[in-house]
Length: 156
Image 1 (cartoon, rainbow, N blue to C red):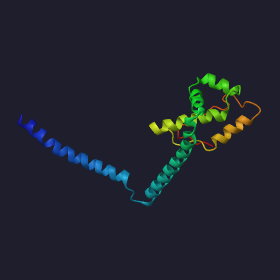
Image 2: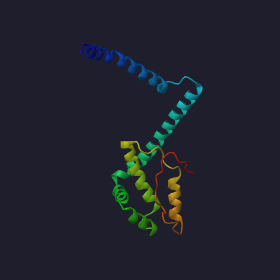
Image 3: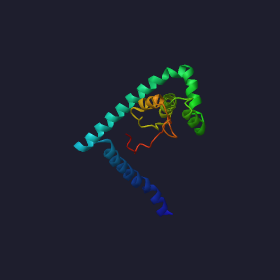
Image 4: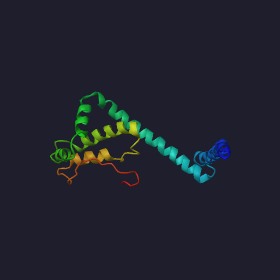
């Protein structure tokens, strides 16, 4: 009983300083850079985050005006279409690839604001969609369908 009382009394004084020391060391490891390579990486990360935010702001501005028009209804209807119906409408050219891409960009930018799920958008995707719309023939079974990739894949 006396041993248990002493153990309970001393445990917080041993565990908390050790826990504090580990947290302090981890914080220094992740918060501060001590060499040129780490600082270069940190600067590159900050530059990329700034570029990403500027790109997202540009997309957000583009679709804020659309949210107050009939386009918002069109976009909502497009993103709620079942996959097979969406493919059929793209194949029959009832929907344009650029319209579908715009609808999904609008939805994804709003979802990203809530969940931080998109790291970046494919550069030139809208130009590719517009090129598909100008094409006289349908270019395969997924013609005009927007896709999302995990960010560990290189996209060209």
